[in-house]
Image 1 (cartoon, rainbow, N blue to C red):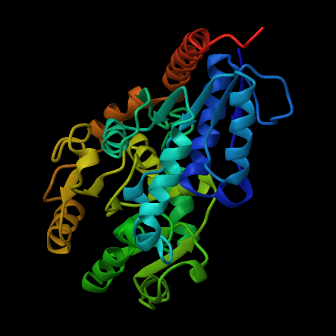
Image 2: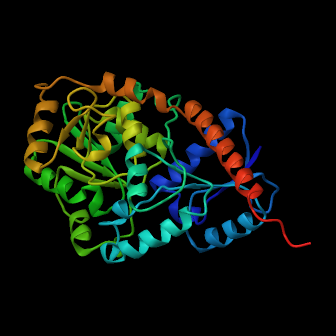
Image 3: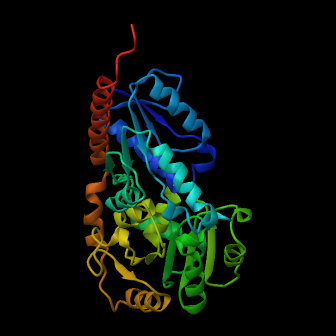
Length: 346
């Protein structure tokens, strides 16, 4: 089996969560011993497509015409498109129609979680949908003291500083406005946000938040995975106030590093991550403020060990095996559908 792992516009999406997911797919396939190519001009047996832009759409038509199976990876939903870019809310219904149209070309549709599977089903997607995590390379996320020191030295934090970190694009959905509001309300703690987006692409309120000048607030921009790993190790709390996710790779990374974690109490995490067992959860800034103080002042127990155990099943070695099964399912379904097509006239 040789897979075409196709993703359009990597130059633009490479630094996003989608870009990380694609890199994880490559490593998972390598670990599983599945041959793949990223060049659509190569020979291949199956297409695994990650994007829904125009060139992607044109290519999948050709692949479909050639009778090859297609696995469509549904990384996006209407829900996580909202509250992102300028005009995203107004465009969300059209976006939903487009992605559903694209996803329907898959013999099998992959999506990161059971939660995102339910969203796709509720949106009317009538295809076999298989939830497979984006995964985490546990061999890379192994904390040590040198990482902590490197992070604190780079950003000028003293050992006594209590540091709260988050990661995401500069979009409202990620909870960036709440992050800034809490930095203002809690000057005794240091807040640092990793991630970047051109401020011309976001609404005025987000630009204003990112340009906020506070002595305890840092916007560090995009950093390499190694530098981000140092941050997971060197910060005292990973705060993920996102309002909507299909999974959240950065959350998996923080779990893998054994970090204490505070998330927004949203449906996607209601089953896998139990409040007070694996992570702490809050809904409002008032609740976040109380929980942050409790975690950082030692009034609440550390949950990092339990969180780390919870993420072990999402190691890329496991993900590679799950992808193989999904590909085999797509091949079988494609063959079955082909056999039911009427024979061409003689």
